[in-house]
Amino acid sequence: MTSSGRRRGRRRSGGAGAAAPVATPSPQVPSPFAHPAEAEFARILDFYGIQWQYEPRSFPLRWEGGQIVEAFTPDFYLPEFNLYVELTTLRGGLNTEKNRKVRLLRQMYPEVRVKLLKKRDVFRLLAKYGYGPLGPDDMPEVDRVLISPGRLQQRVAELAAEIERDYAGQPLVLVGVLRGVICFMADLMRLLHLHADIDFLAISSYGAGDEKGVRIVKDLEEDVRGRHVLLVEDIVDTGMTLNRVLDHLEEKGPASLRVCALLDKRARRLIDVPLHYVGFEIPDEFVVGYGLDFRQRYRNLPFIAVVKHEHLP
Ligand code: IMP
View 1 (cartoon, rainbow, N blue to C red):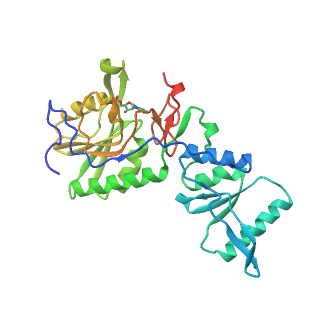
View 2: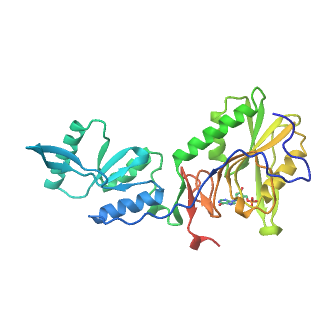
View 3: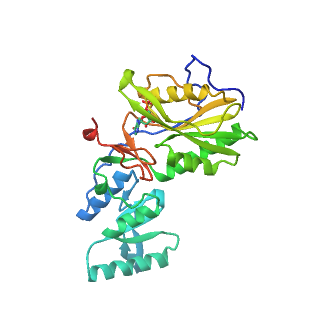
């Protein structure tokens, strides 16, 4: 780690490692579902941005005279989870028959992971893969998931590795801007094998656009003079907030000052602020989750999701 990554009066955004781009996913092409429950399941998967294939493979179960006389075709395959899913909504005989086939499939193809799922089990399954217990209907203002829990964890680990390399052997102070940063900060700090103190700033914004002002409502408790400071931010939009916070921190005389932002909405930038570490470059959408809120809601979602345009002011 060398000197401060930022000189007064110069606003350059060089130095950022390659942020993972996040594209707006194209909607799935509708498939001819055999049952409304399957269409509903596909809708839920689309909401979470989970890839799916409908009936992609048949597994032969019984042969007679070299001919296949019985096969089983699970409804869905979820490549990310390497899992086949057979939905069951019916009672009685048909379910017994499905159970028998799934048992047979597991015996004959032990390498294949298959799950027989009732409607009410869908969210339990998704929670197991980190998607949390809320379904789309519990989040009426949310359009879709943009960054899954798995991608968040993977990218935060990559950022931690990068930071560790750059600051090898140098203690640093992680400064978070409340409140949106809490999930990112909590995950990042636990992955850093470095001596890292933590501190927080709280700010309040007023006005909008070019007239926007930022007031520091809670200052640092640590003395950061002569220390390496890494400012951890949830999202950089116009850059107004970050610019103000950097000026405030620079006045405290740190040995170096760099920025690690989870999300970069670069298309909306008004001030060219320096970002040294960026998690994801995202499209011009209002996002929530993983600490970020919309009217103080949705901070506890374990993923980043897009708010529906019709709910935005
Ligand atoms: P900026 O000053 O325009 O860069 O805005 C940065 C601040 O606005 C962030 O620290 C957030 O608090 C908030 N913000 C900007 N975009 C979003 C968003 O998409 N979701 C939630 N908060 C946002």
